[in-house]
Length: 317
Image: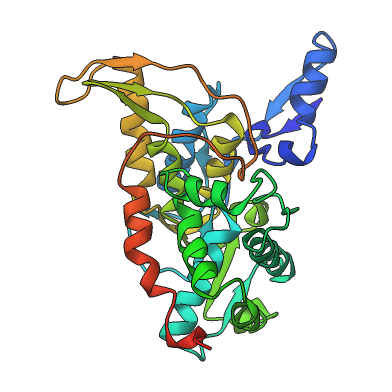
């Protein structure tokens, strides 16, 4: 008897096994799968945000919200912010500290691993190979820079600019990371990657804009035609986890409506403007840091436009 939610499987890149699928496939006649699809964490509005991703992954069941009434909106001030990557989380910390040097922030899981990754980034800039999961797919700084110019890699762009501006000397940023408040209850804002947020919950949650970038990167152009694809299955599972961490308020930064439109266009084959859509094969699973070519627009421009928010007198010298 297998009880759980197999669509929260988000650590396949680290070798974790999806036990429900593995055992149900190996012992089809002996296995009974009972999905956990009722949640007392949130009400139906937030449950429906999670259902968008279950639908995308082809789930045979939907979430039912049995918890307190809540609201799913595009934008709101919340006490917790979730990110797709450590890279964007770092940039948010720098933005917060620059705006208010005394701000008390808490990073779920601490900042040790993030500091290790930042040192890896500086090492790549200086010509050494990186080892951290988000960077080990890049052979040199030039390859990372090129990837950061694509929509899928736009989250790297502000940090690439920052490391270049500082000539690889990231000590100032590491000192800011060490300001992390170890006690979450004393913090004014809680920050976490979606991976570290699994199993946790907060009253109000904002999802970083970078989750939407993944879906934008799954659309390519061929003349007047648009080709729509689904992101990697584990990527969709990660977003499903992120969208179901809030108890009463989820601010998705426009992600859920965008995904809904994306799925509708894949299903019906036409955009509102009448442009023809070409079905596109799903990508094979990859880890977050692996470079990938993309031809969509505007996300990298957005990242470049915001770079100056994160660099300035706080880290000069």
